[in-house]
Length: 264
Length: 264
Image 1 (cartoon, rainbow over the protein chains, first blue to last red):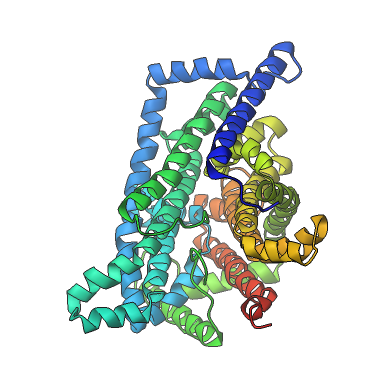
Image 2 (image 1 turned 30 degrees about the vertical axis):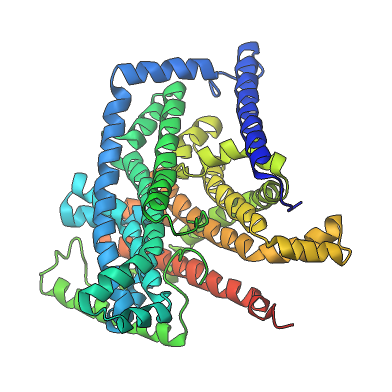
């Protein structure tokens, strides 16, 4: 039940059980595949996946595709984050901006982002810029709405205290408003980065020569099951990095803020 | 609003009116620019043509099977995922042992873009509904697990303590104290899970399926029947709008007692 257990003991037990869980699963998988209880054509044993991973890493395949994905992810994130924070701040501060943009956001935001690929291709041609722009759309909305919410949830008292201490104009903005909204901005950035990865992989699966999504698609069409598992795990690793990496950065930059919950 | 804003916040009737005005202004501007040839009409056909395509698709009943296909996949995937997701999430929230055993897998699989699982599902089940629906189900499953677990874990220990002191034990304690207190987190997980599943389902349709709204957009893109493409866009947007805003309102209404809980 929900009860307080001593922290240190819990942490140690936690690590042991988690490691044990993974070891048991991997060993069970390995043995069942060797004995033939599960079909290796579908579930290749972990040891063969490891050697395939090393092979793909050494011949540069994984590096090439991962580089393409990370590059797209980076530019999509920049394209979403910079205007997202700017527009979000504007919407938080000015009622007019909020009133004008909010209905537009409400309508466009829930459209699944892959569908923007044709639109982006119409404007930019079928190529890299269209893929990056498509991946940035939903992230932009996530960053902008969370930034706006961050400004709007600011305690009036804090704002007034800032004003009383003589903060005006850009001082009020940089010293009071921005630090106060920062945790929310970070939440928006984390959600945006996670979402951008989803769209990048989806777009790569649909139409790109390089990238982890393209590799995944190719390994399906050529029925290279081992390549597929290796690619999936690489994408998972990238997902872990984007989800927990930004969280780490946040707690390092904003040590005074408590952890926010994991939420999309 | 608690925690991260997952999208534009709730709005009242006035917001709906504003949205209608914004859409009308945008549509008129689009119409004029397209007719004047400032926007390439092959890519951006006049809004009236889109409306005509939408009306034709709906009245001739041609779009309905696709709307039905998308909805069916969405609902089946969600139902398939919600119950096991709730069960696992609650167990992970209630019992540390379960959490420690399952945590490595949830932590690794939760951030993976679930579209990436599509090729694996296609290999395991062949190109067909089962693969499409299961890919969608994984999306909802992990979202529900994570939010349910967090919801249960964030239940105030004092509430549990009070419940115990008043004699609640075992199932009674869970049903009367833990579950109601965890409900906001649980409902958030279900809502976000459903929204994200729509994203995955549409991406799957865009990539391989031969029916559904995602497929309509893809095929209309390939054949450059753009009015039809935008008509599908509008339908997906309406569906998404309902899922994000409608369910948000439903959640707020269901949890109306939340605000009054400390009054009595």
